[in-house]
Length: 146
Image 1 (cartoon, rainbow, N blue to C red):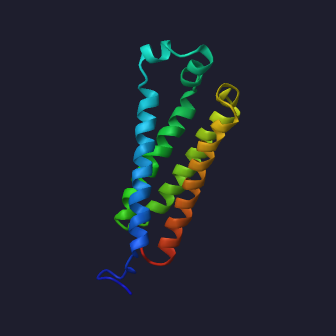
Image 2: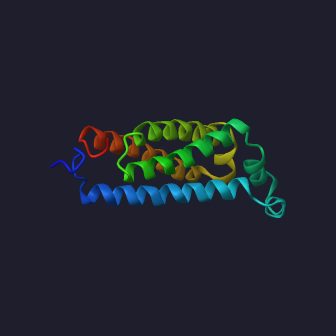
């Protein structure tokens, strides 16, 4: 059923997923800010191998991290405003996320330092990012966002 501007009326599930996704992405923004603003005292207290995970990050990987989290948060806000621009932003965010997680998993000693279980969260995050791309594209196809 269309609403007053010709879009389909979103379901309760749409709103729940949109709000949870925004909260999820805001946690990502907070994690990003904590990682780039870690204090010298905190770094100094870490073992060398752990410290290297924070200090040996190339600018391109940090930039990908920023694009992933800020793009994802903005995409969620646009999704909740029912704007189709959410779809390409989720895609850009996912691509940046793949770059950032690829760096962390394959170009650092993360798994050596923290063990194989350190791969669980990055894989979960990529899965959520991929789901949000699908969800936003589905909402656009159904006319919920335009």
